[in-house]
Amino acid sequence: NAGVTQTPKFQVLKTGQSMTLQCAQDMNHNSMYWYRQDPGMGLRLIYYSASEGTTDKGEVPNGYNVSRLNKREFSLRLESAAPSQTSVYFCASSGAGVQNTEAFFGQGTRLTVV
Amino acid sequence: QQQVKQSPQSLIVQKGGISIINCAYENTAFDYFPWYQQFPGKGPALLIAIRPDVSEKKEGRFTISFNKSAKQFSLHIMDSQPGDSATYFCAARMNSGYSTLTFGKGTMLLVSP
Image (cartoon, rainbow over all chains, first blue to last red):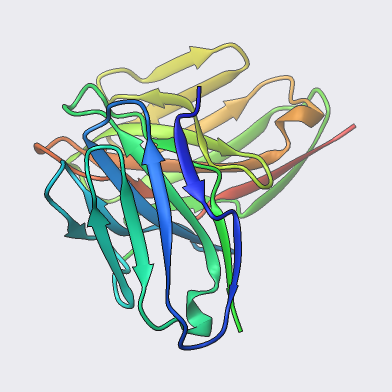
């Protein structure tokens, strides 16, 4: 059972470089999310997609863009990486409706910007 | 403004002891309160969750206590084991149509042998 798959697992970028973090889920979930996790800060929502074709900003969207490519895939792009974006990034997905509240997380992408 | 406040930041408990982690929330529109467990190098995973129509939910050694009037909820881990050593996050979600989870800042639990 793959669940939520993120690629890559690790990445080092130089300041100003761009990259795209990939996420795919195989649970037929409508909603997908991108979080970042920093020490002592918990999980902060960057962007989310309630359903295919829609995206919305979360708590910390500056410096990021997202694309909901199809129902399975939700990518996060850093156009010009900054050291402040050094973090662990998690993709998650959940089903539709108030009863489908459990969010399933991927294994994370550890990004270092130097 | 942090909507879900979690304490303590870290906790050390002896094997067999009780681990208690507390969370408080501001928004009365929250109606779903999960706890997530995260091991090093892994993503968070749902541990147990509660809705405000009950005051307690128990699953094995894990219990959520919920106090709606005080806007507080807590996780109790009975007979704590070294394998419970992980980071625990509380979270909350609103009941209006579609909404996302708001997480606390996490508690790093270490259960000493």
